[in-house]
Image (cartoon, rainbow over all chains, first blue to last red; front, side, top):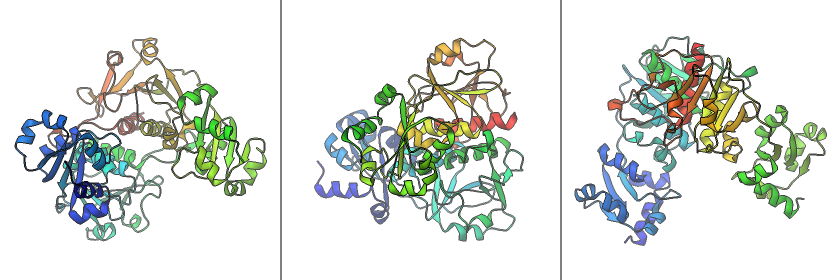
Length: 252
Length: 252
């Protein structure tokens, strides 16, 4: 049984403000919680239905202090999902690791607003072995429930931090490769040289890369447009990320 | 002023059943309706607010019979959008064109369920100059409101048909290239030969390519997994489509 106060507290974590205040986030569903447990992230509380408890006796046994059984109705009250899926966990938000910009590719997100896009980009980074993502402070919260669901567990394997993007880029040496995707007039990504270290900036869905960041890019990249009469307008931010990372990894 | 019957009719088009019955679909928002008008698709009715009418006097002038002014409240009643955007049009669904499978790439969708994914795939096809998409009958309806919004207008430039996919593939010659994306054990897409004609099959988000279709593929393709310990599970269907089409176009 959950107290009213507990229901209120957990429900409040649907909003970034309350998550940040308590430095926690929420993970939902059987598969995501499996990945959470495997990840080593610090779990504060698991709310599981009878079915989940029965299916996971081993996991429950070793975590008796953290696990609370809840009814379907209670789970519905605290869940962000339209159809809650057996289990919900409260997790301590880890401190982002410092990034060593040498010898690796880092993704930088400049004002990504859509949580589904953010989650998908995290999933793509994981697939292509990119371990670090830096986000502008204006980018949607990585712990937004929809973003978390879209990561399909990749959230636990990618180091994500929120920074002043302009200031961070300005700390880098002038010769450090800063790539950025632009819809037109960049270097043809299929033809240009791509290094194995650098930052790849992905701009917002509607406005592209912001005007403060654009002059800091030393390698603008364009994915050629093959549409009839160039009528297609642009690719979605997460699709562009997938194509760009595929190009980097293919060659190097 | 809209009659109750008119509101009911237009609202009913949120469901595929009623759209199919009347062979129409609905396009919403200033930008999408602009693209619609430019497309040459046959428009049955445009419902525009005063603002839209004022901003589009020329378009309205030449289409006086089709255009009806509506209040914001009325638009809200017939719209599928949380925030309706000035205009909504009822469009005649075109008859899909027969596809000549020679000398071109065709995308085949095998049970894509998510309308956002379908719309995004249509947008990607348009970008990469793929003019035809065939969908299994189990694929979500192209005229689903969320699918339409996700196409960003590409819907008007890609020829989409719903077919018995298995039967259609079986009509093709045994040597005709049938590509399909598989998570593991396909040919490495970066290494294998890719032709300029063929069908590229994209499987469902959760189950991949269905078991009836799998044996019909003569070129299974895999996007290499660069994640640490191969821990990333798969790429989203639309991301995989973007990467695969990029590879085909890059080379040929």
